[in-house]
Image (cartoon, rainbow, N blue to C red):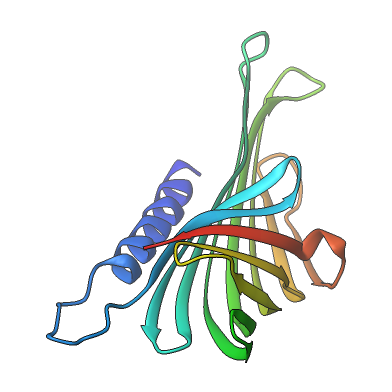
Length: 189
């Protein structure tokens, strides 16, 4: 169980490091744009977002979310929810500072729970949930260093629940609802 969590955490870190390392600088007139910001899906749901321009109008994007971390000292219960998404965002200029954004988005979330069961024994649960989504939205360059985006990411995903106290469960779902709608505020550098 711990090996699985360690392996998935290590894989997420390696993906982030690999995709965010700086490419060797070439003597070009235009520097590639980077953006760092917050993505809000509500007042209590936000992600850290990083974007790096690959070519004119094309960005690689990364989102990291710590859904929750909880520890109960009375019963030594522990819960952890993490998420990581990466994708490619293409921007098509509509007018001056307004662009239409679209592109694929891949999401992986991991949940772990260790709690005391009804009979007093320890119950462990791991949920792995990969998903494939498609970004649709608009980006507005407010200034040379700030942008605001509104986006929705309809997705198709699966969920694999692994229990040490009952049979494992598998589920496939498709999402197109207001919880996948978000506002992004980013600093450009």
